[in-house]
Length: 244
Image 1 (cartoon, one colour):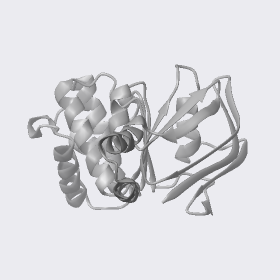
Image 2 (cartoon, helix red, strand yellow):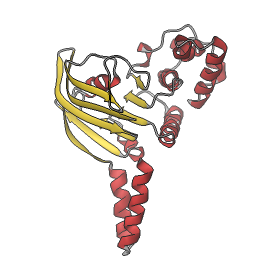
Image 3 (cartoon, rainbow, N blue to C red):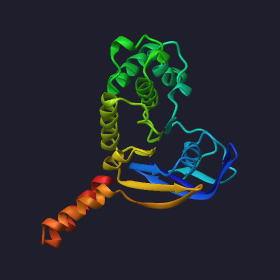
């Protein structure tokens, strides 16, 4: 799905972004920039959860004026998304709110929790009894269970331990294989290896939007080890096809 923000403006907490445009269509993109650059505000603008002051947000050409279930967002502080008495109830809430029976919703929640590596022994615990990294993964499970086509993440790797970090990278690989559109606001440079695109913000503006260094490094390595330009070109075409 193509998510497009056109000439949009929004104000949050005395911070204003104006006349900003961005199109996302498949793959994993990183949104970077120093603190206060406007990354979180831009995610909100793209989430369909807020009303724009100016401009439009569209999904596959359809103008969005309210929240759309095809778009999921994971906030920087997962405790702001968690509220139920147990991990299982919290994860299954989105499905139950859509009228899906409790038994089916909980079965699907169990699969989502397994996917983010939350141990079964913790499913009936309060989500607030978990570690910060575990809460973040529960929040991810609660979003993934709705199978959104577009997923927005705000600093998802902050506070995650080594094991949780590896599980998060596994999730990214699965989302990529499923053809999802993912935008991650982050300061984590290691994630660039998994991204096809890097968007840099400064002062509420997009100042750079380019292929990630990992993609460019791929082409550079092929050029440095081969004199067969045609073969390198074919490899580049295959790489591009894999990014779609």
